[in-house]
Image (cartoon, rainbow, N blue to C red):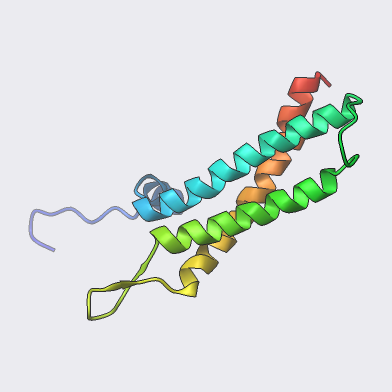
Length: 134
């Protein structure tokens, strides 16, 4: 340290995480947003289907909510994996060339798991009761 400098202030864990959140890399933001957008669109479709079934609508195939949820989660996971594989290439060590590896897809897959789950929970536990009035 120089003669006129003050000691470096130690940041709290919360401050560190908040700064990381505000300055997230663009490819990561795009990958997470793509999963989130797909999950919200499919969640809204599921909510509409659920309300139609509960309202007594007779739809072809009967009550397929369980299948719809399974497809919803599967689609969000696949889209999250593929988009992350496309937009988050890993830098190569010395060549400067960026490569796509299965690790990028795995990152997208594991990021999409909580997004798919939380979106369905928000739709079923928060949005649905507001719309139904219960």
